[in-house]
Length: 230
Ligand SMILES: Nc1ncnc2c1ncn2[C@@H]1O[C@H](COP(=O)(O)OP(=O)(O)OP(=O)(O)O)[C@@H](O)[C@H]1O
Ligand SMILES: [Mg+2]
Image 1 (cartoon, rainbow, N blue to C red):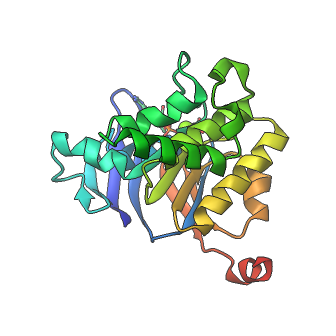
Image 2: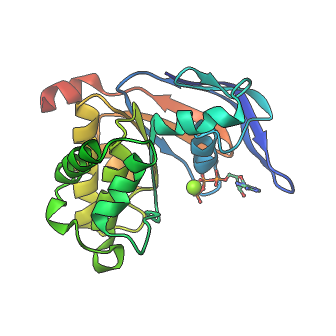
C-alpha cells in the first residue's frame, strides 16, 4: 500500500535529509514516526504526498510510483490520502462546514453527497454543532478536529499526520489521539509524525524511529497489549 525502497533525498545547500530508507505500511496499520528535529519526518511525509521526489530509490503509494507518476496524476493520488498538519491549514474566511465541504466540492460531488458526507465527518470529530463557526473562533484542538474531518471526507486509505498535536493543549491532544484511534479502528491506516514521546510509549502501535535521516529502529506493534485493550 505504501512502500519506500532505498530512498535517499538531499536538498540543495543542506545535509542529506534521508539516507537509504526502506519500510512499508500495510492496510489499516497505525505507525508513529518519531525522531529529533531535522531527522527527516516531514520529508518522508512530503515524499508520500509526492510533493518531493527522491534522488534515489522509489516511493510507492496506492499503486502510484515516484519513478513513473505523471504530474497530472498527482491530484488523483492526493485524493486517496488524508493529510493534517501542525498548523491546521484551514481556510480562515470559511466556516467549519465550508472548510470540510470544499474538499469534496473540488472532486465534483453532488450537492447532496457533499452535505451528507461533510456532516458525517463533522459528527465523527464531534463538531457538527460548530459548523457555522470560523476557525479563529475555535481552540487549537477544535481546529485540528476540523482539519481531520476535512481529511476524512474523501475516505482516504491512509491519514498522514505531521505533528498534529503540536499546537494543541494536553486535553485536546488526548481527544485528537482518540479520534485517530477510532479512525484507525474503522480501517484507515495512520502515519503520525510526533514529538510526544510519552504518548507513543503508552500506545501499542508500531514505531519508526528516525535519526539523522536514517531509520534507527522499526519497533513492531505490541499485539498482546492491543488484544488486552480490545
Ligand atoms: N525544502 C527544503 N530545502 C532545504 N532543506 C530542507 C528542506 N526541507 C527539509 N530540509 C532539510 O532536511 C532535513 C530534514 O528536515 P525535516 O523537515 O524532514 O525534519 P523533521 O524531522 O520533520 O523535523 P521537525 O521535527 O523539526 O519538524 C533538515 O536538515 C532540513 O533542514
Ligand atoms: Mg517536521
